[in-house]
Each structure stands twice: as C-alpha cells, then as structure tokens.
Image 1 (cartoon, helix red, strand yellow):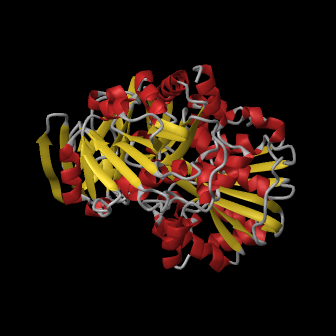
Image 2 (cartoon, each protein chain N blue to C red):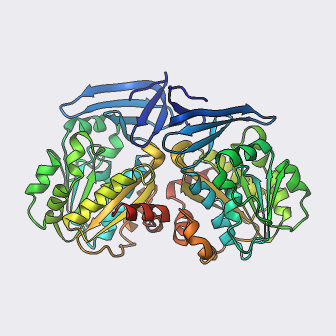
Image 3 (spheres, rainbow over the protein chains, first blue to last red):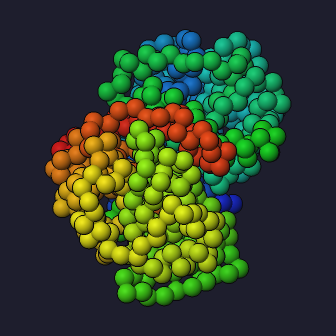
Length: 289
Length: 289
C-alpha cells in the first residue's frame, strides 16, 4: 500500500489485520522502481530516517534497523562455537552482513541477494549499512539463494541467515522443507540457521508451519528468538534458530570486542530474547510446532 | 483520530511520528461518548477483539492487553518482599487490578480511577478484565488519584501502580515531582512504584523526564522494564519502577501459584525485561536520567 493520507506512509498487513504508518519528511516519496523481481520504494520519513519498502511492505528504516540486524546475526553466531563461513540469503540492504563481519572468527561471509537493485539503493540511501561491503571477507552475489544453497558443498557452511521478505513473491521458496533440506546438507555438524519468522502475536501460524518444516527437514531443535521491530506488523518480531545438533548455550564473550558498536544486543538481552512466553509456547504446541 | 480509511481504526501519534491501525470487524464503531473527563470510543476489530480508545489514543484491546497488564503488575509485586496493600492509580479497565489480586499476599487492592465511565464500559466490553472486581480485597474508587495519594497515610502502601493515559489531559498531573513526592510519602520502607513510561524508542525524552522527576522526589533507584505492546505507538512499551530503597532481586516464586493463568510473565521473562539495551542506557544518560 502507498500512503493513504497525505504526508504519511502506511502499510496495511491484511493477514494480521494491523497497519503501521510513518509521517513523511520533506523529501517525501524519494524513489520508486519496478525491478524484474519486485517494486522498491524509498521514502524520507520525519522521525525514522529513510524507509525502504518492497511490494508495499516495510523492509528497513534508518532508525530501527539495528534491532532486526543485531538480533538476526549476533545470537546465532554466538551459539556457534567458531563461525568461519556465514551465508546470508537475501539481506540485500547489507545491514546483516555488516553485523556478521564484526565477528573476528568469520573468514568468509557470502551474501546471496536475488535483486541487485536492493543493494544499489541501500548503498545510496543507507550507506551506513553498506560500510563493510568492501571487507575482503565479504562476497556479494546477486543470484537465486535457493539454487545457491542446493549447489553448496556439503558441510561447507557454519551459519546460514535467511534475511528475506515475507513468504510471498520471490521469497516464497525460502519457507519450505526442500530449502531447509538444502541448508541442512550445506551446514557443518555444529551448523545453525536463523530465519526471520514474522510476528509472534499476529503470524503464529506462519511460525508454526516454519518450525514443522525445519524439523521435518531434519534439524534437531528449533528455537524462537523475539525482539521489537516497530516498522514491522505488530511491532514485535521473531527469528527462528534451527540447529543441526541440539541447541546448547552460547559464547557470552562473542561480542566483547565490539560491544561499543552495538545498540541492542548484549549477552543478557540474548538470554531474555530466548524466553518464550507461555501463550506462544501453547499456541506453537497446539499447531504441532 | 478516528478512522481515516473505511473499515480501519487508526491512531496517529504526532509526537513520535508513527501510526497504528486495526481492521474493524462487523461491529465497527460500537460506542462513543464524551464524559466529563475525556472522549471514550469502543470499536469491534477484526483480529484484536474489542478496542477501547480514549481521546483518540488506543488504551486496551481484548487480544494484546495481557502484555501490558501482566508486566505492569507481576514484576513490581515480585520485587516487593510481601506486598499487602496495593494501589492502582487509573487502571479503570480493571485488567491491572485483576492481575494484582492473583497474588495471595495482597490483602487490599485499591483502584482510584477518575472516570467511572471507563470501568462501566470495561464491564460491558471487557468482562474478562473485570472478573476480580467483586473480590472482597478490592476497592473500586472513582476519584482523583492525585488528591487520594496526597491524603494517604504515610507508610500505608506497599506498591503503587500508575496505570494512566498519556501525560496530557486528566493524567498530566501524574507525571511530575509533586505527585511522586506524595507517592514516596505514602509508601512503606520497602515501597515500590511502577508507572507506564511510553515507548522506549520514540518517547525517550518522556522516560528521561519521568526518571529525573522520580529521583528528584527522593526515590533511590529508577529501573525501566520493557515489553511489547502492539496497539501502543511503536509497538514497544515500558514501565519504570521507582523504589524507595535500592531495587534488589525479586521473588522468583511470586507467581508460582497461578503461573498457568499467565500468558506472558515468567520469572525468566521478568529478568529479560529488566535488560536495558545499550542505546537506551546512553540516551537516558545523555538526558541526565
């Protein structure tokens, strides 16, 4: 949806029955284009900085992207004993890649984004998220993440981060058992996958279906991790961590060397984000997840 | 603000530059009235049940009120060694009162709501929140909370919960040093106050001002506690706990007897909610809070 009210951008989430709006700044609707994959819009907002919207859904804002990017990267990396090879599927705004590259254990970080225009527009409108793109450990590929994962050598990846749009359009194939089977094969024995799994309040069925598919593919445990994300539907969001072996503890010192650069993640926040509220545990259980 | 789009209710938060919408159900705009204090509207929503709106601001929905009500009551009560007398200022929907009365230590729970119509409409549209109103330990007063607190005997209260609207209109006087001084006087030596302190992302200045006023009134420590609240601006909300003595640990067994009735609170969730993200710590520090 584009702005319904003059001076505001609004996304209506028809699935969850909620909507979110941001007041526009003087720049207004900065850019709009249709790529071979999707429509991308850029807005200048009054209090959240720049906003990227894909097919009408908010993707990233200057102000609150740190919540999502930190929580989609540092927890899963800290759960791995020594993450050397990390693959980001999607993630074209490069904010997740930047967080991954803060970890000194990482020797190779591959980002497989299907739509090069997402990254080009991020370089222009979110340059701070792209500041690690020239890191010699980074590889920015513009390719189909499903095919890339199917072709990855077995056991060659330590951590997979699926940082995709919603399960409609180009990202649909990232939310099923076949893709998770490819991921499981590509991961080493300590391997971990995290995928954004939408709102823990208004999209619980999607979370449940994802967890069933991840377990069905052979992952040993699937663990939700919750965090606020104001620009996403309901303002409350989740990732789901699938682990090849049972998920154990995490390295509490994993972020010590760059703690000052972080805005949300701390080891204590990590522990708190792993707590599943009773209602969600019940609802996922009822759904068989 | 009332609905701008046919079939949706929308609140625009002009302070924070964000907006939130809920799709209406078949009942639509159920009720509207102007009381001596404020305008109250009731909507039937498609996915959040009933919604109460006061002066255009969302107050309570059937679906997500458990987050706010559990987090405004159980943490502060668990931090007190033995809460016997609890006062709720505002809280006319009675959802906080219901949570308070779950605690077996509580001998007296006084709710001081200025606008009787809020409670009458809650009884009609949110009967589940009012199910403890006939508990013999409950006293429902319809009076000015500021005056009530100024007249309370010194040291007579264990826990004060300020469950008010935003600091404009009738609730304005609940956000200043004079009110906090009354509260401090009314509290016993182990006394604690919690007040809703708005969004930790988009209303940080309000949080900072509140913390400064609480400390200025003589409270020893002020501690934020964070939780999701989808219907409130930014979807992320806070309480601030002010303690007469330095805030220590909490009784991890405080909710054991009624854990099955809770949807969000657990002792682990309590611990997680007390973690202050680094950006917020820095911003509150810069504001002198």
